[in-house]
Amino acid sequence: MTSRLVAHLGAQNVAGATATALAGHIRALILDGRLTVGERLPSERSLALELRRSRSTITRVYGILESDGYVTRLHGGSTRVTLPRTPLEPDAPEQESAIDLSIASMDSTPGLYDATVRSLPRLAALRGTSGYSLRGLPELRDAVARRFTQRGVETSADEIIITSGALNALNLVLATIGRRGERALVEQPTFPHALEALHRHGYRMLPTPVDVDGWDARHLTGVLLADRPQLAYLIPDFHNPTGATLPDLERERIATTARSVGTLLIVDETTAELDIDRGWAPRPMAAYSPHVITVGSMSKIAWGGMRLGWIRAEASLITRLLAIRPSFELGTALLEQCIAVELLSEMPALTTHVRERLRAGRAAVATGLEGIDGVRMPQTAGGLSVWVDLGAPVSTRLSLAARDRDLLLPPGPRFTTGGVLERRLRIPITLPPDRTAAAMDRLRLAWDDLHGGAVPRPEELSRTAVI
Image (cartoon, rainbow, N blue to C red):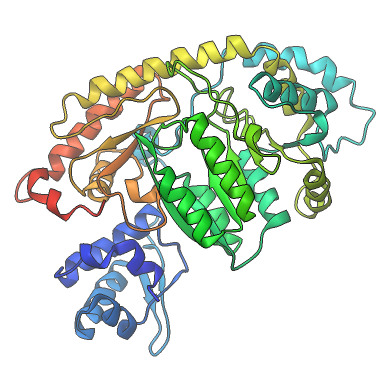
């Protein structure tokens, strides 16, 4: 069985690499977060067998990592991931100057302040209650249900639970229906924290490909029919990170197939309202099967600081979710709920603002990338980001080069179940244009750093692509 380390490395990617180069690949995985602190690595003998290298080479690799502080080794025992014990300077310049492209989220909507002020009387009226809100305020559940109905799937407040964000909603669903050791179909690429949540709940991943042009629906339904996974996690609207939208016909086919094989569909609609110029509006996946579980959030359309989301599901599952929820959370904060009631009453103005911001961000990224030879930006009609083609499998190395330029951006493999998609890079379109322009300037410098000197040009590296 392939170890996690080798799955991330890709045995073919490091074939013939020197001990120093192989140590560099592993160090990149640690810095990127794909190998976690404290994680046990394969023994020297096991790794040598997996990579078909000599044990002495692997001994040198682990020795280099240990001397640099990236692993700890016990004689005759385990090798575990760690980080160098380098003290942080109190006023490190990078803390103020760094531009963070690992977070694809906008600042707050201009209407947030006014909505907060208008929400205070509603909050004051709740002072006589316990303050705990397991199911969510009735008026907010009504508002969320109305939004689903407006989008094409009849929904009642009894089918809604208000949560502390979409990721919180996903974890509540997994805590309720999860089965350790079962299989879960996931898109590749997808939202990294969803993969982490599924892994934490003991699922084995079955990836299905998604690109800027959409899903391989034949592959997806084939996996459903052949493997009958217990659940599937999908982002059908402005997919994160590719920006693709699943057409209605494919939604119906996937929902029907999942229902026939007993697979629960968990649909993430966090990005569903982030339309720029798609030109058409699909029906929610829940319109095609009563067994679809939908999670959503206010974070991307209002503000990341509003930790408020929801679950839409059958009433019977809602009852089960409510029974499990008190074991790790006693409800959602009332202030956020009161604010959300106000914001949802102004959805046309809210989505117009989001559209304008995303359009400006998309244009700023496009302008910035024009000056980087070999990088291709695809068309994207909405969502949080563009899924850039680098033309060569250099995403992790570019990410590391960008750190030296005070630019934080996760490489393509961070969004996968293994060390693949090294040709891809997610660039958010959510920052203000001036901040985006500065980020693209730094990316251009990192690109030049990567391709300067003896480093091969992209066209020389393209034949090693793993996609």
